[in-house]
Image (tube, rainbow, N blue to C red; front, side, top):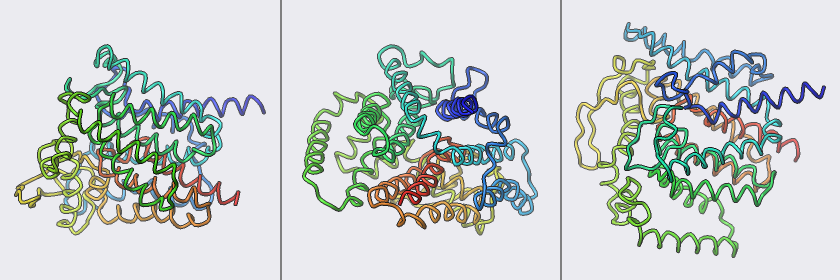
Length: 407
């Protein structure tokens, strides 16, 4: 019995490691997201089988990519095998992560310290890159960044590193009162510092600013200590505002914060390639799919969805098509899955909010905050195969169920 428990914990640690090291290829290929989780799922197929309603739900979801591609083929009579395999693999990775984590929620609690260790490892790697050479770990993966940006740790670019840290903050916030509270707060602060001064991710920084407003709206009860926190953050932002170039140098985060400082938000959207691509990906996914009557476009979007013309802040953008890869979770889902994507998105958010009133107010507010943040993070370049997406959704589902039992 003891050896079986040890084996389950060890296997779960491998699972967590693969979640974190989703981009690491060891020089075997130039793909962004690796297939380690898919291999893990094939080897541990029995561990993925869920029970009850979840088994029915995710058995249906498992066949969604095939159904979607079939509809797209009937509509266009065009089929690309590579694009289909890529779309099918992405969804399989999501299902594997979701189901395995759903069946091993208690193992996450037991291995929370290991989760934090992995978090610290990524920060340390980023710090080593900062003080030595940003390209020192390039033999492990294929980066796509420039010297003027922040460091990447074991991700392809600073944005991916920053967004990953935002997801880690959300997960750690949920478990703030279950594990060592002071140490978890320290790790969350460390993640924030890493986003600002090591990753220097403009996108992740904007999400940190957004999170302050969202949390302020949700936490309506005034407490003096929160006023002190707010005052400290305000003074810190004023300091940053006066020393932008000194702190961030000639980086994209400096340019974006400087544009915010001068109230030129339109300039941010139109001139910053990263922000523009993500906004246009979401717009394209919806408008092109609308023009297609929300018929699923499948995974060969160059052939199934036509370019769009739109006016964005009095700038006329003609014949826009981002290609096969959309830099937006919601944009790519809507473009590829059409009307089915709305059913999928509704299912996820409905399942979260349906039972949220059955848990304590403390966790209810945190889950509402995390869910809203996930919604906004869906406008970044993450895809359905992004490991922390299926991971955090599964944790929220099982966390709510565990709290219901206690209450």
